[in-house]
Image (cartoon, rainbow, N blue to C red):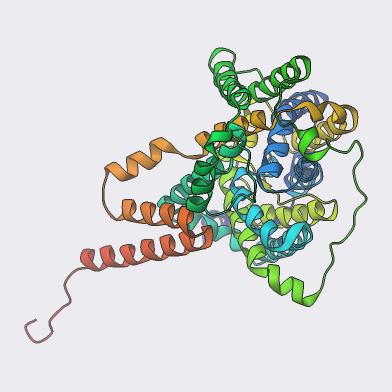
Length: 444
């Protein structure tokens, strides 16, 4: 046998070992050699991402029905673990807009203790999924399904911010479902605050203006600082983080387990499964985006394991769900990050911001954070891709619309399940039509 040919065959069929599949990228970059110049680049990128993540983390937590500090805890502790253990060089972990719908619903049903327990169970599910190498199959979720549920989530996020965008005063609780929510807000439209409207509009204009004129500047943070200073100096009568939540703590809590009972675990299990499913999809999509921007390749199963430990760690410190965040990960890449150290430093910078500047957060208007999330929803909607699929009317458009509408009016689980089932049926139907006619042995 030709030895050279035999060697080539072995190279072609080489499969990485189990240990290689789950080696964190942090270990990889240190093996390759990590220089002082790389650390400086990661420090600059980490600071850039932290500036973006600071207002987003608080805004997402508030929209999820919790307090702003829980979003910061998720970004600090969960985000650190994502970068420390993850299978992507550039992934930035933290609270994500896509989870707002799920966390808000879980909060309404189970309270914060239930959300923390569901987050921990979701973390355990993600670890098991990664160890079973299920991350390899996430990429097979049909594209129209991901576009449909992402656009549906964007609509729900925007609807959840209408109250604070307009400064509407409600006498009762705001409904979670879309149509009842719009009905209640419509009846209370007479309580709209012109000051809140002015602040939210100014926030949106500032963010888009900075992106257009100075794309390297932190538009989100600039909008938050300017509006907070304006409210403090002018004494504008609008709700702020301080008036609604009393500000954010200047310390972080010690780790503790939420109350765990068998009955409580069974009650939150459906929420935990949805947290894990969406977290897996969102984080691996984010890692794929980073791969496309850098030419690198992430380890999907290692990433799922890291996301699992990150969610457990976040919940231990009182934080909400954690996942890979596409916008912050892309910002990290564009800022010149060299590896996971940038994500770890982003979490440490956030911790420093919280410890040193927590009292200033009390002045941030809720209308400003609503404006930030309105911009996030606009970016999530994938409008051009949505329109492209609809224009090329066919099976993909049907899957997209079914997923989109069910996500909005029924729920995310139903939207993903029906969309995936429809996509599978359409695929089978097309394969049947494309198959050659069966041979007739009697006439052969």
